Length: 111
Length: 119
Image 1: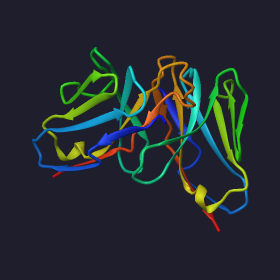
Image 2: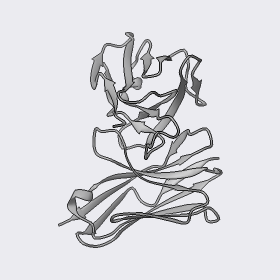
Image 3: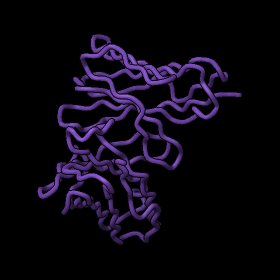
Image 4: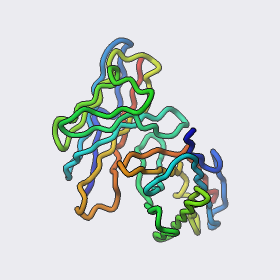
């Protein structure tokens, strides 16, 4: 069966440290993968997109890696801040641009 | 740019009634829109793909007669939950796919969501 799993339901880290979130999938062949941030009661907000032929993408304090052999993506937030506290979702997209979301990880950055 | 709105943001209805939720792309035309449902503490689940001028494509397990989708224009898709029951209570989110080559940074832009509560 198809699954998209994110490492843990909740992750607590100290301010200033690097948060690393994982997204593992089985029985998918995504054309690309995206990471989103979702705050309570809000729709997802786009953060980064990485295509199947790309290994790494960066944007300011964010970094995403994509290993299609391991079927895994890692999402890093460096120099984390309390304002980074939110739920982070990975989404796999097929060639029809349909998104399938992971289970989400709730990140709390402790001051 | 690339704003997607939903209306209403919250709705409470009685069991057995129908509820319509609108999704609009405000500053771009969207041939394709998507509808998702999110239960508390769970992730977004794709319900259907809505194509302008044609029938929607539903994901496995989603009842097309219960969740009616109409994509009558390039900026508007509607989801009607017919004969709603308490188990339909959820957060419904739409997204819109911008046209290719328009300089958009994302492939789907999400609306703010609609909280449906069925009593």
